[in-house]
Image (tube, rainbow, N blue to C red; front, side, top):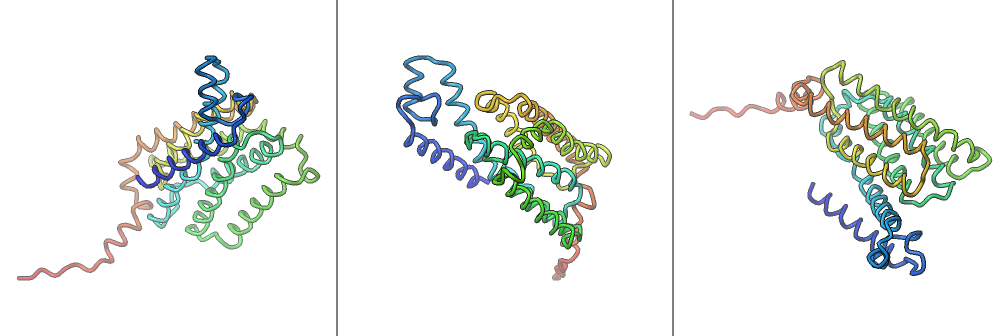
Length: 277
């Protein structure tokens, strides 16, 4: 785990240095974050400039963090050799939201710092869904067709104006609140009904909560779209509920047969050492 944090810090430092190298001296507040921009703020005390700089640094921090945020969930599924307690509907709806938001932000010309995390989260979602289908014995044909269709639709929506006009993507963004609720509510209700959180990863849910909270600030500064902002507010709130459920039900989760079944089977399979007299 410490190596993951060092990797994240290295990405952040590299990003800031790269941005500094290509920064323009004549317009600090509309270009990349840089030391020169910080000096400009120290001279002028321009609050708007500082917010823009912070939003860009924070935005790239969210993108870098997105590369790691769902790895704990992937590792937890592989470790348990089970996807018990994880709602596939959550990942299907969430991935749909990532796809059209990525396409809209890219084609609308927004900075990469405002949408780069959609790429990384979408890829990790595909891997998690593949594991869910595999451990539920649904990989072929359901899992393969689902993932293939998702990847194809995302690519077409991102690059084909004729197939999916920008106006359509903009209208889809108005569904952000519904998508967030639809992707999180089934998991929240399932946890409350079962009184455990299955193979859900605390680190992943914490990362999603922190990322959504950061996106509230970056959206207010760089995108200024109220529909997208409301979606991030709802995402932060619902991911916070998932974090609270994991902490609340952690004792029950440890004793759940579906989650601990793989570990119990391994323990039973180990040969017992004979006592020597």
